[in-house]
Length: 356
Image 1: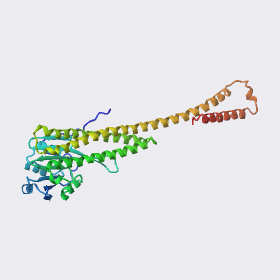
Image 2: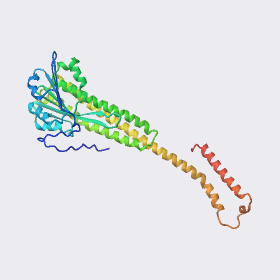
Image 3: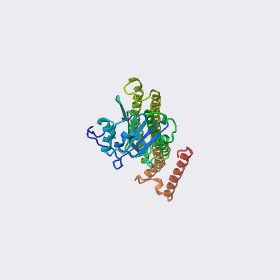
Image 4: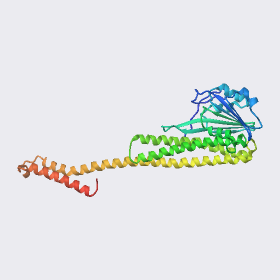
């Protein structure tokens, strides 16, 4: 069994905020949705200075920050909502594991969103952080992406019950959207594994083994990403009983229980897929062994044919003066004929026994 190792991130001092991700060229901007059952106001490219007149405490408020490379913007958002610098450091440090922090007024949650890379065996990774405080949900994405496009449309078109709920339900559907990306990634990996199983049955190309190991690493990475998510979702379920953070409505805890169940199903499916991947590896080595056996069988047949021929050649190669056949005028042709007939007879015998 392979040991799962977690990637070690570079240590960042919590009061020296620094973005450690890869998307440093993306412009940072914010989007704000303020809504209830009867009303919706959407602000695009809003500034921190506009929060006071735009946020409505009696409604659900969703601030989505796209891009984390503008540290001044992130710091300004943190100052406005009195967010601890330790949390801001966790938002900017993308090498951290999925985690949940629960305070009396704040619920902080970060998660790795995974998607397959087109025309490649690699997996795209983006960290997304969520924070609920004073009825406002803040989400921090490393770059502008379409993870939540369908959720924005649901809010705009009043589809489903999202407009009738508060920020805690919005957190649930955002987490659910990210977990759907896990399913997409897993299905993509399963398709690749199925292709590898078919290839390994008919080829011993070393590239196949390299791809098998690559997908094994991908499954381990998926597992490393989901295990802390499972634990964090279980912690959200337990918030109902500890009475520390009360921004999640009692009736909505069942939604987070569903996400926890999904995480368990994902882990179970990954274990099953890793067994299938092991089958691909076994097929590959079995094909190699079969090919080697065929080569050895061919060499054995050739050796078996030449053993008696070598014996005849060895006998007549002895330097005795008196050998009756040496004086025979057709002795050479006779011996050659006997050797050819013996070779043909042995080939016929091996063919009859289905040795080749």
